[in-house]
Image (tube, rainbow, N blue to C red; front, side):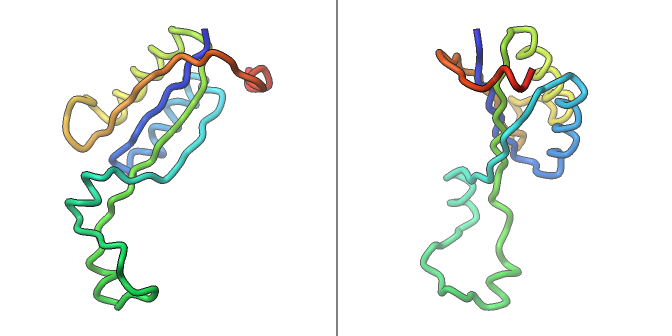
Length: 117
């Protein structure tokens, strides 16, 4: 069965190492999106009603609220286990704060995945 594995990565500095670890174990391809969790946005106090061109102080006071959402499609449970292990080796225990989270969902139909094999 085919699965979609999704990682929401909190620590952006670990992304190159994570992608390299996945490449090493043979992950065929990934899609990476910038994302932001509502909790981080609220904690950072980011306002979306600021002027189009903010002041220099606004720019320097802005903190990083971004995550990276990384998707990959895999065909086997063994691939899932290898990716989970590689991910934990880079980011640490996903149960700890500010690491991220990973989840897997079954996919009922996939088209074009054979070209990734």
